[in-house]
Amino acid sequence: MRLRPHPAFALWLLLVLLAHALAWTQWRTGLGADAALAPIQPLKVVLSKPMALQAPPLGPSTPQLRTRRLEAPAPLARAPAPPEPLDVPKAEALPALDPLPPQPPALASTGHGVDAPAGVEWPLSVRLRYQLVGHFRGPVHGEAEVQWLRQDDRYQVRLKVQVGPSLAPVLRRELTSDGRITPEGTYPERYDEETKLLLSAPRRVSLLRQGGQLRLADGRWRAAPEGLQDSASQFVQLAFLFLSGRAQLESGAVIELPLALPYALHDWRYEVGASERMESPMGGVDAWHLRPLNAATPGALMAEVWLVPSMQYLPLQMLIRQGSENWVRLSLAEAPLQEDPAPQNAASAPPSSPASEPPP
Figure 1 (cartoon, rainbow, N blue to C red):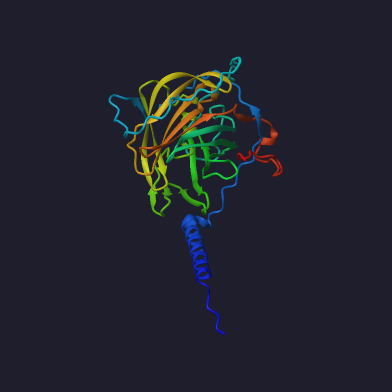
Figure 2: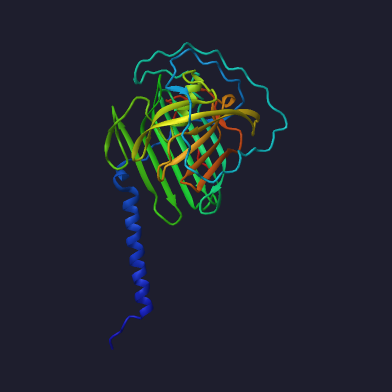
């Protein structure tokens, strides 16, 4: 007797084959040409000291970096107004501000050599954790973490965002900038952007810098302008400019820097708004609002930041828009953890030294 397959079994087999084909396509598309790149290994840095508010230093007299007064700002693309900046519960008492140590002499420009020193102009290695609220086809909640890690002349910036429950996030995105510290600021050499949606394979795009050339995510090479930053390094570069006195926070001023997005280079501009009194997990602080002036491009992330001088000009809040309807706001959830300057954070630290960990 000849057996004939049941129609339900044939349909089930077809669905299985289609699922495998889709998974294979997503894996090929997600990793693509960047699959050959090994993941960026995190720097080994111990983060154990809660950050204390400090009076902002008076930066050394150094050349100003492409700042100017704004006469007539171009209007941004219309978007639904997000909520006002979120104030976290007030601390019981505002801790006294600790004075910073004296500033060293201004660094002399020696190009991009690996012997560039890093003084108190640079924030200590730090981890900042944020609460996330926003709108993406409806209300969303989640968490985020930013790590600024440095050892000798090497640095990394790691930004991790996840939307939804921590055990099964609907969306997870990680931005990583890896490069060198120079007298002129951060010098990104590689940038990775990985996105993972629920029930799909991760997709990663990368930027690679070799000498004066930059390889975009689609394989094209472009000339890399001086001072070029990426989506993750730009905020640490801003902190460096303010800490070192190379740029000044003045309402109405515009700060310009070249920015590499995955598929294009841009001359990015931030307008400095007014100083605002805001609440933080460490108490009341003064924050400066910076917003981008560039016209929104399809799919691009437009980030506004509130930088706090008494937190080494690191962000208290970030508001990130994509298109005219989607946005997320990141608000500092706890006191940041910094490195405790000690021998265990030297580059020669053994591999067993505890490293900064991502959120669970």
